[in-house]
Image (cartoon, rainbow, N blue to C red; front, side, top):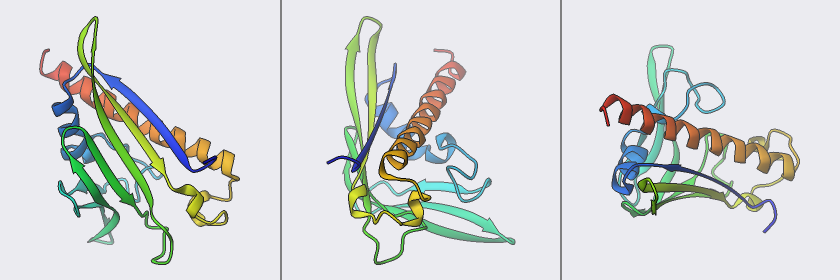
Length: 170
């Protein structure tokens, strides 16, 4: 359905198991910093690795740590797939959640094995047009900005994987 989903993908020359592990276990290391991506510059992001596990961000406010839940894992299928019911802090209890599905597809090419990471964020049509998460944008502008947001995060993941590979001397 038009305006309901955003899709971004990256490809890295790394094994699927490793990419899934880095995506889920090193979330705080690769997830971009700054107000566009996090609530606080020094926040810590964490994903509990199981169905029902929480995606959280812990922020230090006035010397106290406060943890915000951004989502819950609904599908945990390592190393192939991960689905999260997404509920950012700006969502109220009465607001519907959206859904983020991340798939890790194994690919063989002339340079060896690689993994394509595909991120699809869907369910936006259930979120009312005047919801604060849309920042006053019409559907087209909002979906385009979300596509850029996820593409930026995908690029950050790819750069993190490349830096780890170079640091290991491979």
